[in-house]
Length: 171
Image (cartoon, rainbow, N blue to C red; front, side, top):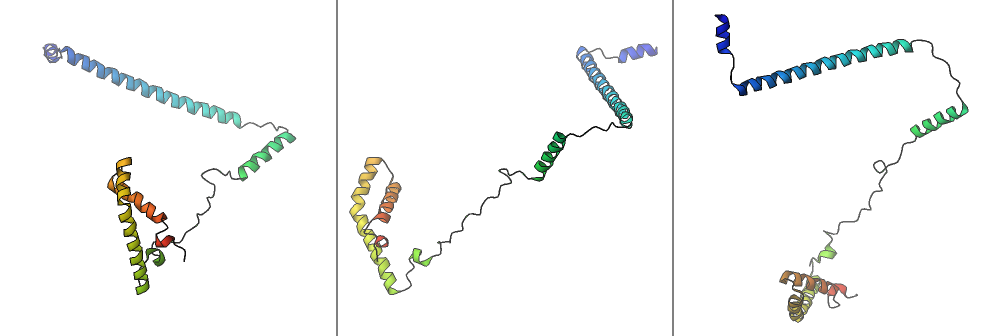
């Protein structure tokens, strides 16, 4: 009666049977792997013990030749000298240049009447050149296909090099 009850509870679905068989195979492989690993560890320990027993005997004194001494000295000298590589090479410190962002002579801060008039003169000269060159700027735009801001940038560069610019005139 117990055998009949066990048979009724037994799995009959083929998919589930295959799944269970795969799980058993994986478990068996894992067990075999563990056994092999422990055997290899034990063999390694045995080999170490055998090697340590062999090494305890008297060592034969060998003659050291002049070539061997020279080789050892060369190795010691090579070890002592640190190698200079890209990572260990000392990079020279770059030259520090003064910060001209707050230099008043470059900014042209008008602190007095004379400097204010000089700046107005420069602005007037710039406006004069701009008025003269507007047709040239429009020609550059049409000719090279530049946008207005690009043409103005080109004009600004021309102004910086222009002899009419007060900053370019020798005092």
